[in-house]
Length: 100
Image 1 (tube, rainbow, N blue to C red):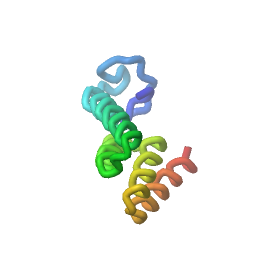
Image 2: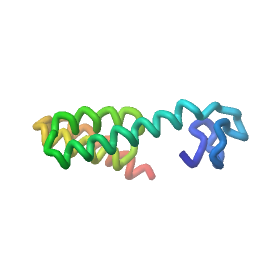
Image 3: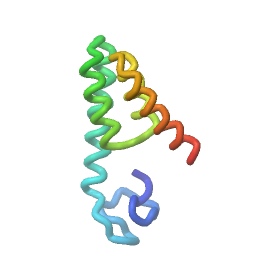
């Protein structure tokens, strides 16, 4: 996390935003948990365990909605035959990509 989710101030690793004093502990924990689920989903993909991949990719995306996490979820959904989830996720990240 480079910017405060509340006031958009540039962060320098502090646990509290210097400008608005928002406690960033939970947000940083969510990012860390998302990264753990992301790695687990990638490992499951490599092992051909696509249901496990979908479970962890979904948790990853729910914790931290990034384009990379969305792509992983869309891929996992496709591999599991959940085309509606794949299209919904793809539309979500495509809109986010256009916004910046």
